[in-house]
Structures are given as C-alpha cells and as structure tokens.
Amino acid sequence: MAKTKLMDFEKALELFEPVIGLEVHVELNTATKMFSSAPNVFGSDPNTNLTPVCLGLPGALPVVNEKAVRSSISLGLALGCEIAEVSGFARKNYFYPDMAKNYQISQYDDPIAFDGSVEIEIASGRVVHVPIERAHMEEDAGKLNHVGGSTGRIQGAEYSLVDYNRAGVPLVEIVTRPVFGGEADTPEIAAAYVSTIRDIVIALGISDARMERGNLRCDANVSLRPRGAEKLGIRTETKNVNSLRSIERAVRFEIQRQAQILADGGSITQETRHWHEDTGETSPGRPKSDADDYRYFPEPDLAPLTPSRELVEELRAELPEHPTLRRRRLRADWGFTALEFQDVVNSGLLDTVEATVAAGVPAQTARKWWTGEIARIANEQGASAPELITPEQLASVVALVDEGTLNDKLARQVIQGIIAGEGTAAEIVEARGLAIVSDDGALIAAVDAALAEQPDVLEKIRDGKVQAAGAIIGAVMKAMRGQADAARVRELVLERAQA
Ligand code: ADP
Ligand code: MG
Image 1 (cartoon, helix red, strand yellow):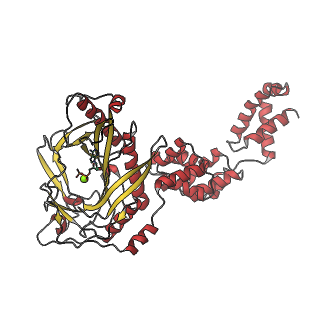
Image 2 (cartoon, protein in one colour):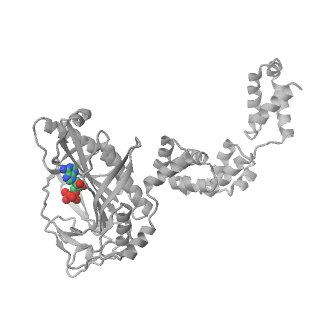
Image 3 (cartoon, protein in one colour):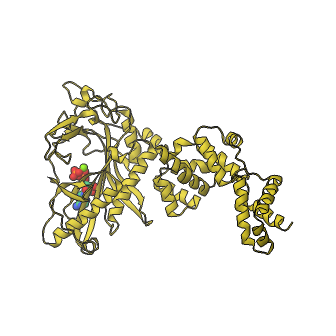
C-alpha cells in the first residue's frame, strides 16, 4: 500500500478545526443473551451457545432480558442521561451473513437513554464535558472468520466461516454529539473518553469491558472544518479500533490525512475506514450516506419498554461514585503525584490500594508494596497481584514493620512467605526466624567480634574517621543475616570502638 500523504499535525490544526464523534459499543455481561436464554459467554466452541432465537428460525420469539434493561438504565444514568418513559425496539434490516435473520433488533427513534454528558480528564489535567446524544440497546451480530489470505479480511480470503455465538449478546451503543473545542488534544480526548466509559461500566459491574475481546468497541468519526467556518465538514468513520492507544493514533492520522486532501483542493469521501495497527494507517471501507437505508420499523414481536420511575430512582440510588471524581478524590487523599497515581491505575490496583489504606496502611506504603514486590511476584507467576495476597494480610506485615519487628527487607520475605501459603505474618516470622534482633547483648557480641577482626578499621574509628564504621556495620549486618536494626548497630559500633 502506498504511504498516505499526511499534513504535519501542527500545520493541520492551524488551518482546520477537528470535530469528532464517538460511537462506543458495550457488551453487557449478563448470564444470557439479549432476547433468548442462550448463554452469554466468551470463548466457547463455535456455534454452541445458540437457541432458535439467535438463528432467527421460523416461529422463534424474542423475550427481553430484564437484567440487560436494568444495566442499560444504570449506564444511561451514569452518563447523565434522561431515561425514556417509553422506549421501543426496532428492526434494522440488512443482509449480511453475520446475522442469520437478516435484521438486527436495535432501537431507533426512542432510545432507552438520551441527552447526557460525561466528564473526562485528560493527562494534562484538562477537564472536558463530552455531550451524549443517546445510549440505546441492541443485540450483537455473529462473527465471520475469513480464512486464507494474509490479512484476515474478506479481501483475498478463500472462504469464510461464521460463528453465531456472539449473535444476540446484549449491547449498549453510546453515541456522542459532535465534540468541538479539542485542539492539539483532540486525539487524547477521544482516548480519554473511551477510557472513562470503560471505567464507568467496570464501576457499574455491567461489562467485562475488555477491548481486546471486543467487549468494548469504538468507532471514531472525524471531520475537519476550515478555521472560522460554521458548517461541519464531511466525516469518516473509523471502525472497531480496539485499544485506547489505537483510538488516539487513528484520530490523529485522520486529522492529518483529511487536512492534506482538503489543502490540496480535494474533498473527503463520506465512508467507513479500517484501522491498521501495523502500519498506523486507515484505509477505505464502504461508502456511507447519512441516511443508510436500513428500513427501520418497530419490532412487532416486542412490546415497548416502560420502565417505572420507581425503578429508575432505585437504580439511580445504587450508582457508584463517578470514576473521574473518585480518582480525583483518591489522588488528593493519598497525596500521590500524577505519575504515581497513573501507575496504580494502569496496574489495575486502585481498588486494592484503597482497601489496603482502609486496612490502616499509609497510602504510599500500600503503593510501594503493591506496585513493587507483589507486582513483581505476580508478573513472575503470570497472576494478578490482588489474587496473591489480601489487603488485610499486607496490612498485618506493615504493622510488624511499624512496631519494629521487621525492616523492609525482612517484610519482603514475610510477604513472599504469605504468597507461598506458609501461614500468617506472625507464623512466618516465627517459623523462618525473621524478626529484627534488637537485643543489645547479641548485637554487642557481633560488634565486638567484627572490631576484633578488623583492627585497622578500629584504629581509624578511634582516630575520628567515623566513615570507616561502615565496614564494621556491614560485617555485623551480614553476621546477623540482615536481621539487625542498622541504626542501633551504628550506635553500638561507635560506642564499642571507644571502649
Ligand atoms: P451512524 O449511523 O453513521 O453510525 P450515528 O448517529 O450512530 O451515525 O453516529 C454518528 C457519530 O458521528 C455521532 O457521534 C455524531 O456526533 C458524529 N458526527 C456526526 N457528524 C459529524 C461530523 N461532521 N464530524 C464529526 N463527527 C460527526
Ligand atoms: Mg452508529
């Protein structure tokens, strides 16, 4: 593929204002599918999680999944949306083998949730309010596997296989209004928005939200308009970009690509585009008009939903704290730098550190152990850190450090012991003989022995060369297998040298 001609990003922003619109699909983690009792699980053998409803067999009738409706309402509320009093299902008709019945049940002009706003914060600390147009329920389609050919795409494939396991999995599609005001940080805004949606659905517990599994998928619409122009430019829609970093890169790429075409006097084709992770480029998909003819009509087999106001208020009362606000609060409470905090978040340890702090451990100490020794062992074992040790167990080790029984080096060994299943912190200290020796009798004996072994050093200390004491302290610590209080050893070395 010929390298696409791109305008320098900064120059593109001088000439044009970027406008983005994001469509995020969230797969709900209900036990069963949107309209049938087929199991909603990932990774089964192809075409095993099916009922006649998933396949649209004659006479099969859909039944709405109550849990999916509750999850959708909760999500709508978390996005600051209104919840519709009457919300219907519609058939979106299209012919493609990923849906056996030739239509997808979706929502059209009366989505379950509409008119919201999501607060996001980008790395620079800038807060942006992203306006939400709607969040509607629908069912996912099946998955085609294009076999043969190099790209996994249909072009060049020898044949295609279809797996209907995903057909009928409950989805919520969240659609933003056009987002203006992003400048150099428009690509970051796109990624931060999707990241915030992911945090929200995780906080709600309604989706596994794993982008690499397609639980969370984003289509990024991008257009440019000349500085000062009012009319929106023509948009492209880059489909299914499946990581946060790719979203940022894809938006940036489209801004640069479109700017070059417009500056050269060309025009943008309204189309879908595919993102290529390897080349970092987008390529044309299919042309797209604003009124694609899906012949939407009301789904005759389903009555409209009329969620009671009591249910809506009940779900509103159960909403978790908004993740953006929670993070801001925790970061301030803990006094972490932006980098320290990001490290905890990226390691998936926010809840764990919070629980550890609740168990009485200072935040910095909790961070140090979780992102240090415990993360290291987790990495070694291919496990996740919170599976290895509980916040309470860690707190019991930290308590032993605080009371002077352990230093950090010994604490590390106790943590290793807990992870290896050797017992409680106290039992491990006992069994492995790990406590710090603070009994002066044993320390004095070790100090005297070390001084006797190194008479030249002893002379130096006596001559007032206090730095020389380091060699003796080192020898004592070694003799005590690290289990001495180093500050006390130093005091004793200086004392005994003069004796
Ligand atoms: P479609 O059926 O094409 O997917 P949707 O209404 O579901 O349309 O989503 C279109 C998305 O594109 C919305 O987020 C919308 O705000 C955004 N959008 C519409 N026009 C533009 C434009 N000119 N530039 C950028 N984004 C746009
Ligand atoms: Mg759409």
